[in-house]
View (tube, rainbow, N blue to C red):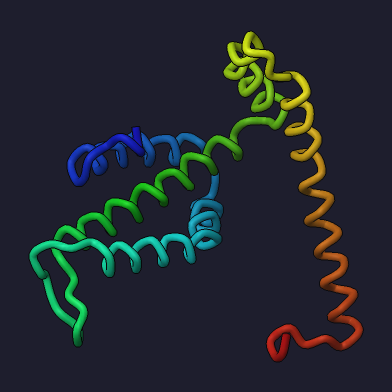
Length: 158
């Protein structure tokens, strides 16, 4: 629905169930803001490109560049969509166990098994990769702390 909704009314109408899911999930708001912050660069690039590339009646001009009202509308629409998608994904991953998530994906992909796709193997690969993400994060933190203890300054230099 988020992808298909038109701006502004239908997209803003989707905000109501999204905020309800956030409220019901009992997950701290900080978790959702962190998810959005992680992809802030994507949101920024999307908005910037929309403002520069979409043509229409000018809303305002800066030097030689003019920004149209359509560009502002599309940039706002896409940024809201990306944020809503990130929030919905965070609700799903925060409230559902990895095994239940993989069982659901396996059930959704079951019809593709008739086409000869190896669904069970695909789900097993996804499950194994999900299990190793915390280990990779822990190892990255351990390496970071080891480098800090050796005197590497991450604020200066590369």
